[in-house]
Length: 183
Image (cartoon, rainbow, N blue to C red; front, side, top):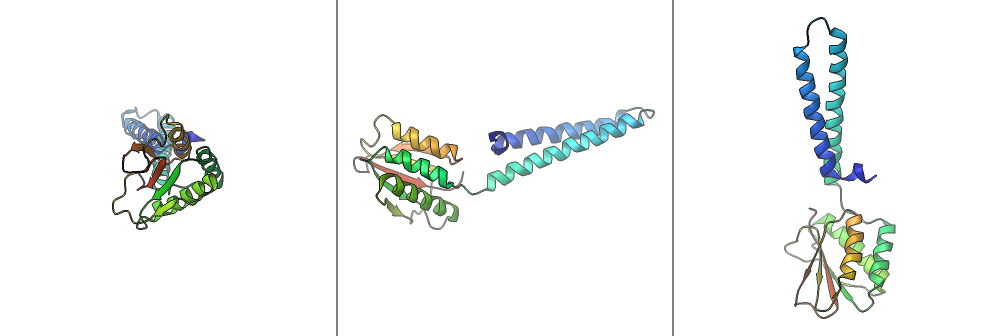
């Protein structure tokens, strides 16, 4: 369920529940003395709301700290999307100093290998990593943006942040996949 895997939504709902629960718990002090049963039941309800809010914010933090990953099915889909562009040469860049980015880059290399049939150039010595995954397009690599759409959508569906850029430094029909830090 995508609802329970979106950290910002879970965090916002969790904070809202915490505030609602605390406001309700504090408001119990204003009940008249004769309403003990109502006061206790509302106290339990608001305590449960606060606990639910804390649980949601904890889940959001856990999702935020999780490593980016590609499942075998996602790798196969990515390879299939890359296979639609046989004339494009791929490069994968990352830093071996960032364990999470390096592991993701290796999975990207495997997906490119499966899709294009050729091992992409792989460089693991980038001194400064961007945030997320950047698809850098060379001259005439993807004039109608079909590759960026296909590959980018698959990576975003796998919860991997993607941006694209164009540069004149790359050869024609070359795409560089830069796997950077986790956003």
